[in-house]
Image (tube, rainbow, N blue to C red):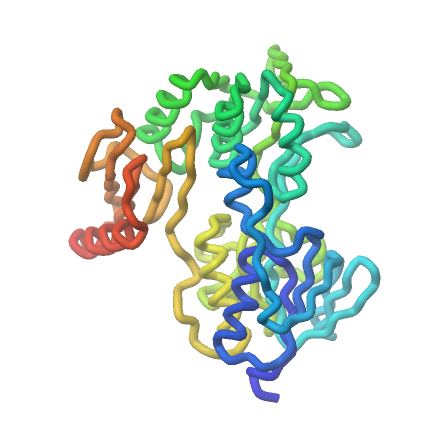
Length: 380
């Protein structure tokens, strides 16, 4: 059997899984492709969920039409993998054989509710948005647990709808990745929009059944709406018996290969074994989907398995980042002013690499990539 005729199974209808399927066809794969997904809404883009849909700017998810790829779609979660017989089994008992497997099962929202505690609200799927929007429409107060990218985007949606919002975290907003300089700028902008920030020096617990608020240390806060934005957890339960998944996720090499021959991984479920951490950004999922597809076919990928680019939108201000994270210290201001909400910034890391940030300033991503590349070359 030639590599282009083999049966390839993709577990996960995520951006990584969908990218892998499209890349397989683009690279000449003629054999069957089976995509096993667990989301009844099918394949869609997740970034717009918090950036646009939660604000009411879009009514429907940005779905992807995969009909032209001639693939078999199974909407039933994978529950186990037998690597010896090369078989994936779904919840209803369907056994799906493969010649090559791409693990793209993504991640799920990390929850902090107590066992059997009802009413915890998270935002990860289109179904979550549909459930959250009516409550947000009626809420006059909200608490967001977590000041990362998602938490700040949810807080922005609250502000856009006139909902008084309090953001709670152990660290200032986005400080762990973007550093104190940008975190301080984001806090100033958010506080000017009446967002309240509360530092929690102990773990946060949800109170009420259903949930009505949070408690930490000796404080209790209540609101009409409480949203948990406390990160995510890789979907690896169906891989428990295989040995390729650990507490971080599924470890991969530069070809997105796992430790088991014929099995590759991509997207939020995967992490680079050289970095020992996941980087669950949309751009990485796309890059890894392409690399995993090429590797499954035994041909050279057209890109690297990482792409140091992401963007977010906070209170109407777009932040685009090209280059490695985290950021430390103050940047070089290449253009504009952070105080004015329009600046082009540069950080040079100790290893000579460069990170470029467009903070509220309109710059094409291609330009940001070129600046990062050119400045890295000039400092190494």
